[in-house]
Length: 344
Image (tube, rainbow, N blue to C red):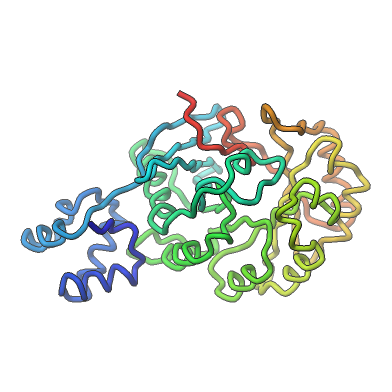
């Protein structure tokens, strides 16, 4: 049986026209039911005739990721533990932002990068998520917000479990279909892809203009990056920065560099100076994140005064730098904390 949410818009059209022998406009109707109206059963597609629904039900199902657990933070962040069809677990997070929500999406079960400060990296890599498993996280998030009368979902950040660019084929399919008006209708300008940086894959992402990039940098030198991000550092920092310089950006757009501050590791003023020399202030901005201490990890949270001094030093160099407010740390939903474990 074909799970309809695993079909891209083009694949759904082929399925409807070639397999079901139906007119092309039926694919548009089914697509709208799946993604805009979020129907959970084929029987609910009421503008299809009963014989047509019966025919479709003989060949297809609609199956979302199963909610295994929901945890709510005191700051309004909501974390979902989702169970996939093969029993694998992933997490997705809804983050409140004034009049809307952002959703942090996972792209892999586990992660192959093994960054020394990241909980997800401890899991190792199990497999890529399918198109439907990534898109299904959005269905779950939107439905929850609607059911509870909450603000709408407007922004997507591919910053959850996994390295998005190592699941590039499925990521691009998702990014291509997000703006469809009869579907999720989410502009590509509202999607941010976070990556440790692969120049060849960044070029593909940039050439297609389907998302804005955020580079997980976390170190101002190749030597330190190799120590705390050994696998990511196999791409030399000079090569990564050269790729960023050629990334196609529209007027007023800039690449975001994510920099996780680890106490007494990468948070000195000297390292702020090194970071300022590395990043082109005309094309980049720095998003500073104070590390959220995790049990069993070898790092501590930096002092607030040191974080603010680091930020000010970057501004002194003419760089735009902001300290990201840590959200969901009390439910292990903050940066680097996702691990897909049942806490019940």
